[in-house]
Length: 457
Image (tube, rainbow, N blue to C red; front, side):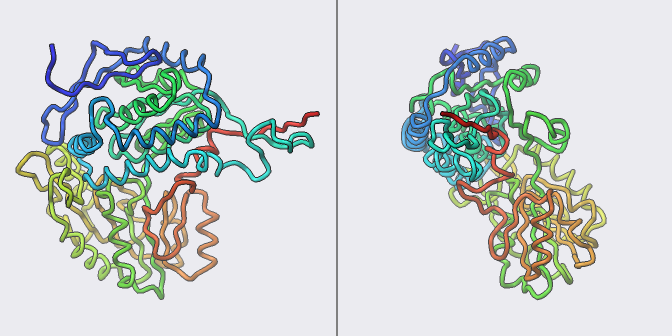
């Protein structure tokens, strides 16, 4: 019998598959919105086998289909949802502000439209893309796939990461995506659009599963991509599964920099996109007294209104009340011994229509290597600490992004040489700055591809 809820079924290698095992997807107020069908392990195994047996579209056809998918994804009714209805639904279910959903989906569409350009960026300058290239007659490196089937355990806190795995599809991989139960709408819509654009059912699949079947997707693939916390990073480090963990992005202001000239960039780095992304700033380090900057940040962040996520003016993320309270309890426990400039008494503000806003928090630390500096939470929560050149780059390590306001070229050299700092932004460039064609945490293509020498007559 129909429940009246939206129905999200698996998109298998033979088309839509309606499974008996179903789970309810609710919005931030706990209201049921959709039913998500969960496929069993046997279905996963057969789907992965089908991906291995399938053939990829030729490169030119892949690029054209990806560009068509971008237009379908943002401009047409897909799986019964207009783009406006999809946008509203994702906002209500994930708690991510609607404006953030819109920006993220625009980034997904841009990645699809520019797939050919993005896929070429990681290729070494000395390699060609096809063995038929005339350069191979004299001998040349050829850029080739490390496998044929790529699996993704998707994140559910933000739609944006779905732009990343499109690069694998552009490179000729067949792709299996396990959606997050928290927000399955984006991958369902995107894969539906890709199929409408010309990709075969056995070239890109959506496999919602329970935890028991989740690892079967990774086992059945040549390579994989997984999102999660530090435990996920430790589990998969050095394997054929690429982990994407916390960002712990940071900002550094050295002596001679007046933070007042850069307050907009600093605050925006913390609060942009609701503070839920790995590229939001978690820690700000200041050469000098951090208190004045912390106070100024707190004043600015405190002025952000608390609104439902679907409101066009919403900036802050919303969660169900219970999970928001759990985050709040964790923050207050971790923040003991710090100086609270904002959020010291709590960060949860319940909304009349259900759900709770996680309001910003600003805490001052007494040293740059305080344990709290490594605590990353899914809302605008920032730790402000003192730093001196004597502290070196130790407190700056393990950063997805580091925005540095400095004129010290030796320091910049050290930051670029540091393996655990993935991206360095110098000057007035927020930590969340990105564009298609530049690496996020290295190029995905570096993981997916390799070079082979080819010489021919």
